[in-house]
Length: 448
Image 1 (cartoon, rainbow, N blue to C red):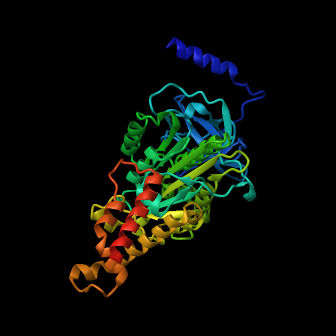
Image 2: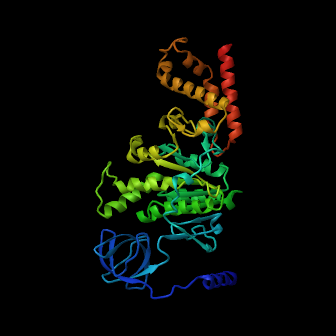
Image 3: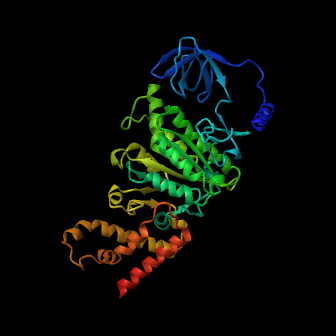
């Protein structure tokens, strides 16, 4: 206890005290969660403390301004407000605290520890919205990335600095796949943002990963579904800022954001509160733009040599592959993994729809034999799925389609190659070797 108090005193001594008066304002109106404050001209993204009659304080964030008034939204639980309640400016506008102290910790969108550990000592700051880099400052994707999942390593090989989407409906296995990647991917630092998930899933994830040997290289930023929309959006931005901070130090960072759809939902709620009209299926333009801005923050840095490899889950509402968020993400990402509900119902894990999934950088990352084997296996899987109904009905006769005949001849080995035990890992080199061996055996059997 004494040691913690001494640490707090040391932090207080090192903090630079702002000179001049503290900015304060007063609550003018409160309507549907939107709070208007007069006398507090702060930039968008700034934080403030609102006081009530009992002396309690609640954190709020500036989300806009109108007619000289700042528009704020509560970040915490609702509280009893009254007209003319005092609002006090807090912190540095547009900046968040970062540092090596985040490694091995679980925090919320405000940088406060939620894992029961000691208070965080974060000496450095980073812009919440990130530091924009020129297009030519982003290095090309040239080095393969080992995610630990055989089907992805072999048939949709990722690269260091790539942005990959995992797209599926609810209950198809996105969270389990993300859990496997987070635990077995090869990276210097792993930053996981759990946005809008169930509180139980957040607790289970932290308990699983904070007790392993990866603990000192993983950061979890979590905001469950029952929190305010601006807090959920802020968590995604904070996780991206942490990843950018470590990239600036030359580290290879894996950023996992689960899910991008929940971020779009949060941005939609904020935009509708501010009066922006809905466009694509109720999504205002700013909500979809928020998705693009987040994804563009990942990538390689030619200046520092660091990289942020982004893995973003995208929830297809109603299994609709043309959902606006899915379509926007697919257009901006460097590849996508599509999970199939039909495969999941067969007990096939991971339930990756191979013909529908692709990595746009794979051809530049693998050797010609691996590239040839991957294309041939994709063709065999597509032929088998296309003729599945005919085969099950007994309406197909051997010899009608040579490609389908070959796929049926090695159907068992193909399924064994595509499936993987939950929690198990398959290194990149082993995945490529297994792929070439499978296709070599298939060609030998076909020739025989």
